[in-house]
Picture 1 (tube, rainbow, N blue to C red):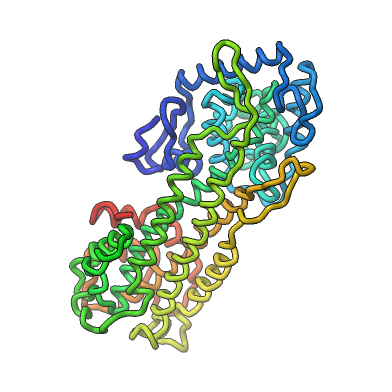
Picture 2: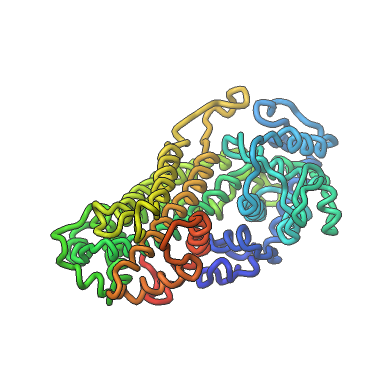
Length: 519
C-alpha cells in the first residue's frame, strides 16, 4: 500500500493492492485523480490459490451455488461443468439491465477498484487474468458505459462493467463512446472468456454500494471542514460575538466534536479586527451563528461513525459463495455477505446529517443578503434596486436545500422482494449511497454560495481587517471571483468557488495556516 494517510488523494500516483487495507484517500486517488493500480505478489498468490480450488470443485462436480447451479431461485437447477462458461456469460448479459443516465466517471472507477479489492482477497475463485484486465481498464482509462438507475443493491451496474471485460457492451476511450471490444483493441488489450463463478463474482457484492458511499463520505467530511470555515467567515462579517465559542460552555457538553468545532472557529478568527470590534455588539446571536459548534459537531459525529462502517466494508469480502482454502480439500460456503445494510444505513445517516449542515448554511446565507438582519447593504451590492446583487443566489441555495431534504428520506427502510421471493429482504443500499453522493455535491454548492456572499460582505467592513486566515481565504476567492459592484453573470463565480471547495483548496489553505481542522 502507499503511505496514503499522510498524502492528499491528488498526491497519490499509485495504489498497490495486496499487503494491507486500502484507505479512503486511495480510493479517491484512483477514482477521481487517475492513480495507477497494481498488485503485490501476495495478492496474486492468494487469487491463484483460490482459483485452483474452483477448478478442483469443477473436477469433482461439487454442488456449489452459481458454479454448478443456476442463480437466485434457479439454484435448484444443476449445471454441467461443460456449461460453466455459458452460465457465466449468460449471467452478465442477462443482468446488464440498468437504465437511465450513466454513472459518473469517478463512480465507475471507484466501483472497479472495489471489485479488485473485494475479489483479490482470495475467497472468490476468480482468475488473476480477469482482475489484471480490470486493473488495465483503470490504468488505460477505459470507462465502461454504465446506466445508473435500477439497482436494488448490486448486480446490474456491475454487469454492464463486466460486459466490457468480455469484449461486449460499450465504453469510453479517448473521449469516444465505442463498442467494448474496440476500446480494448485500441488500448492493446484482449477480452477474457469468463470461467466458472467469474460472472457471478463480477456482478455480486457490495462493491457499487461501498464505492459510491466512499465518494459521498469523502465529499462530506471535506464539506464539514469547509463549513467551519464558511461559518466562521459569516460570523465575522455579520458582527457575531466570539463569546459563544468560549471553551467553557462546550466543556459541559459531552460531545468532543462540539468543543473541537468551537476551537476551529476561534482559531480561524484569531486576530480579526472585525471580531474584536463587535464582540459586545449583541448579547447573543441567532442560532445559525451561535450554534455552529453544536450543529456542525453533531454532523461530524455521524460522519465519523459512518467512516468506521464504510472503511470496514471497503476491506471486507462481500462475494457469494465464498471459497475457503481449508485443508487440501477446500470448501465453498453460501452466505449473504453481498447485503449492503452496514453501508446503506450509514449512507442514509450521512444524507440526514448533510441536510442539517445545508439547513444551517442556507440560513447564514439569508442573513448575509438580508439587510434587515445583516446591517449591510441589501443583497450585498452598493446600489440595490438598479442591481439585484446576491438576491438570487440565496434562491439557488433554497432550491438545493429543498432537493436535499427530499433526498434525505431513508432508502434502506423500504423493502420490495425480488427473485421469486428468494431475495425477500432488499437493502436498497445502492440508492442510499447514490443519494448521499448527490447530496454531498449539492451541499458543496450551498457552501460555495455562503463563501461567495461572506467574501463580498467582507469588503463592506474596510478599513477593519479580517483575521489573517479569513483574509487568505478572501484572496483565494478573489483570485477567481472579483468584487461585485454591479450585476453580472454570477453562475461562473459559483462554479469557480465550488471547484475550490470540491478540490480541497479552501481546506488546504486554512490548514496550512492553523494546522489540521479538528474533526
